[in-house]
Length: 262
Image 1 (cartoon, one colour):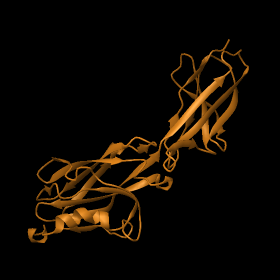
Image 2: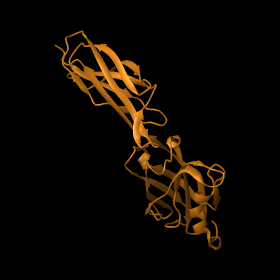
Image 3: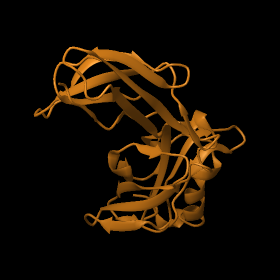
Image 4: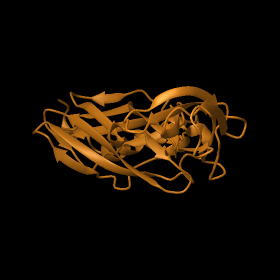
């Protein structure tokens, strides 16, 4: 327990603390028995950004205290890199600072905040692709407080695209098929899609009547992100390329290209 007399002026300071103190230098701060028990970003999914559309996602913060949680006074922020002067390289905060709060019990409340990340504003450049950190505070009805500088991690990734084309079509059985394609990803500096170079991409085949793709071989993208490889035509079916993803770019599968084998 912590007496209410300590609350004066604290709510505003707590809400702003995550914004004004560099994350790397800020230690967790707390008073009393309040705890943040769970923080979930975007429902546990990666946040994938293209070059144009704003992505809306949520951060849900669950906190508990024996006196209950006071709502509407604190909010989380998500950031990539703090600078010594207090600025951030990549920083987003909720549109509605109050959030939507649901009391799970007398002691425990979950507040869900809606945030937006704009690929033309918030990432700032391609170096912010990867892991972002969520800083989350909470305030109890009796004045207990907590600020967790690193309450959760989330991935903000550059959207990827993958194409495929198998030819010739139709083709005689056991003849060679050439399969081309291209792997591209969002560039947050040019706001265009550019080739993702020197990446391993699997060529996969699904025989007509089957529901499962099998990997035939692995090709590597060239200096422009293009793919080109060959394989034998053994049966009617679908060809596709599959990219497993990296720490900055999500996995992606191309659409399927059906080849009729005569």
